Image (tube, rainbow, N blue to C red):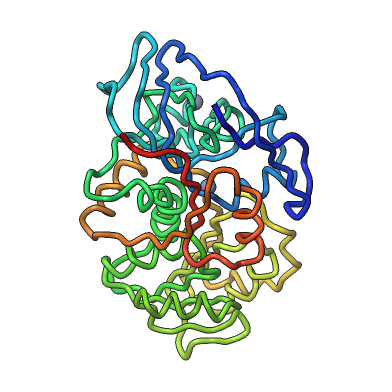
Length: 336
Ligand SMILES: [Zn+2]
Ligand SMILES: [Zn+2]
């Protein structure tokens, strides 16, 4: 099978991913083999390729927004997963199921959690293995291409809004407007919120306006009233104090980033007034189930830019240069 693998950490300009021919893997206990149709391209894949975050082993096949069809099952498949079923594999590949976090439905924080396309090979390949207990059944009404971005960008955006404690009618700030924010804005709108989008890119501002943003501008701009909640989607620490300046007392700022440059020293007054500052780490199985249901109800529209599997380096480079509106997806194989 064809796969695009990270052989060595390098800047994406130097093309760290290489096309390799690998044997088709056989599923073990509780696993399924998927024939991958589409895989989304996430900022985390870029961090993994460039070595900002370091997977335990190289070479590695990245990709954790995987849409595929179950082609073979190992013994002991969970959740009634069937051969021929269309499923999604998100970032959370598996968790221990036994620790305090797992027992309290916080398996996103499980110390034994494994992540797709990081701890194990992911979806930048024609086939992959996944754990049946953690794969997500997919809404039939949304195409493979449109579904891939939902599986990380969408789910984690949804969790970020929830952890930012967004309630209907809130004035919600979204800082950075890429794959995750373009889906989160549609959820915020469904909840009757107004959205304030901060991004440098003119193209991304236009995209935000099309999706119903009330206000768009740069981080140096300030709307005429405080925001109730803010989510930062860009991995730049200097955005944190700038975003806190716009947040009302009692409001919450959630940071949706697996990696961030250092946060500069800042005056206490920026969090005084009972403002909450928190991070968002991964997502739970339940987040996936809830968000996919909501996405179907909303009729969510993913904006995608499609690339062939072999062009994964180019897709990641375009992502790094903020050239993508919405999300890049790799078209891996035809559905049959
Ligand atoms: Zn656990
Ligand atoms: Zn991701």
